[in-house]
Length: 509
Image 1: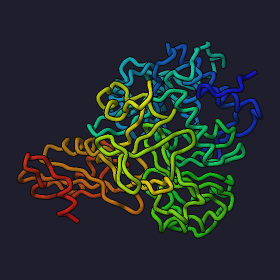
Image 2: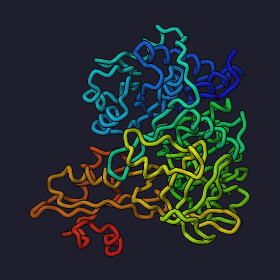
Image 3: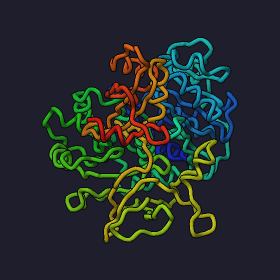
Image 4: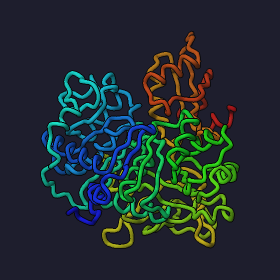
């Protein structure tokens, strides 16, 4: 008999697979259909394989894979082995993968054969379980699973043990590993389900990478509910997505503004099966809201605000959308938010302040980055209280609704992903003919923010903007490649010689 609790993330699958195990848990590409019974069996076999490779409680397992069955099963297999999940975007290039593997001190990596050109030269002696065709130096995942019993050894994990590292871009250029416990994540899943008013009969479509926390939590909510997840690898083909919405009778559509703008660009049809539309990352522009309401006439539309360091912070009740279209709402269930001045004093209603967050969803900290953790996590009023400083400016009205004003740092949010300008600038400086480089985000109705790069070249250089973008495409994930490259004789400077990014926006189109 499975335990009827959700103390750890692996428990959710064990509980949901009980009733009924033949219900579809994951549907991929409209053709691959996997039941809860199969998901549990594969996850248990994966767990045992990981333990056979030396994984013990708290060890990190890197899952470098596309949005796939192997990725879904490996996430839960890692938890059932007692390990810590580290999902890495399949678009990640070799240098960054090497950094992540070293930073998290990975014990094992699960990956796919089609990514061999990326991982082959950076993994060293790390054990690799590889899905798909055989790759030299790896163990073929399917063969190992077939030869393994679905009976992992007890691992003894409890709610306060580490569950996941979710990497997010940092202002220094190096990604930061946001450390989450099982307690952080089980609370978050339950809270999201509560305010979204979800039930066990949901059919949730996910168009986002599982390495992106918004995409990952679609899987986690689905399994907690015993619902069905409809997985698609991206949203570049809107007609495929529209067909999937119809054929699979999708009830929940999570997205970012790019997703919604793409869907609204063509087919004027309606999708009455959709009962929830949720938006995060960049703000949902007011002109999109009535168009979404027309396309999804039965749907509640949620505006939300969050950050990886605590997953979700604020949500606006759909009934408030016509009344407060500019607001991102109030704190989600079981949490508290308030605004403070830079000196730590409460700010009056209607005045700008920095958002602070309390609750069981606040991260443990950044892995191996104590100084950056100290910037984000502050001591509270009570013994042991920990408060997350979101570093973003808001104002609050007299009824407690919050309005986003701006970010304290220069992290760019493009296509629903966080992009570190420093990381893109480092790629630009990889071209020896680039003398100066600066990257900024500019408002874009589809992408939220588009990435614009400004460069000054060495004298005599014949590099073009096309040459520079092509270089970036070879060393950065697609969503990090600048949409525009502006070549200038010189970049504006401060009195101390630093590049003045605000000056670029003021002086250039």
